Length: 451
Ligand SMILES: [Zn+2]
Image 1 (cartoon, rainbow, N blue to C red):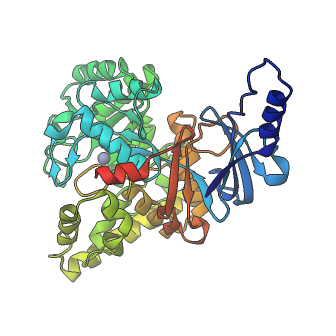
Image 2: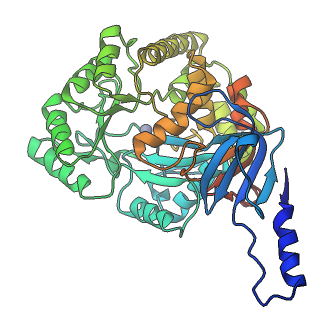
């Protein structure tokens, strides 16, 4: 890419000086014009070839075909000919603070580690990450406030604070489990909702999963009053689910969203229709489940992009995790995953509100990187690349209520510059040339050197 200044104002400035005016040199425009790229705006429509967009003070001010966008005099022009630009990703399901290289432990939950992880997300073009229900204390809130005030960079952190489950029955990973609040009575549950609603939490998370019979599942006796109390506070409830039967009952109870697809059976037409009718949003969350279908390490383990932020030891451990799989186990995993893809396509065809969640930040589920794999898997279900990108950008941003995820006037200038067009292969979202957040280029080289 090349950068130049438009000639008009340079000439003007010289003119002013030459005639001896006492007026200070006319300031150059603060506008930056990005021209020549194919633009995927994030609205699900066809890409715009040879588009131009203007950024001023971190905000997009105009987008369109070159002929329709007037570049102001004195603007800085960035030539992106041959590149493709799309909005940064908005991931509504991650977990910050637990991973530190090979270690996966709640002792890693520090401001410093989370700030590093937010840089990892940003490096890969994730502009917003919601930490879903596993943030003890106030560190996540402090970071969110500092980012809003411009005191801290990286992907913007949002948080569901601590979610609610039966005691010791929340997240699957033992080291994350104590972050969930435990409730046994309606009174306790409602008091916890009040406590969560008094914070700056973006959602309230509940876990409705018996973990294969190993823990007591949160039942309707508690989640119905939880949902009711949350709605009285205008807080939306996202349920982690496993069984389709629970999904059905949760829709009936007024839940706002699901953090997973059903994983026991294919979601039937009746359940899909209920989800659409009640406008329950769904994060497919495919990438974790997809691991089960491989008896050998999948191709992405060798992706150079993975090695840019992840140590060889972690990559070796990921590779190792596929070593002792029997072909029978992989076949069963493939069948179960194919079922999830069918559920997803059904939901999509029926017009369900699909949003993006990749569940990154659990062990060996790499923050920033696996979001791109999640996109590939959404497309594998039969959803088009344009719609998959829309789900992962504007639809998720709108649901969260953040002013990003779309190349449109008034939106924050959060975008990825790609060397290849994902319309011709969704894997091309990993061909990252640059990432901009709030109109500023993320220092990817500097971050890479630090890792
Ligand atoms: Zn999760």
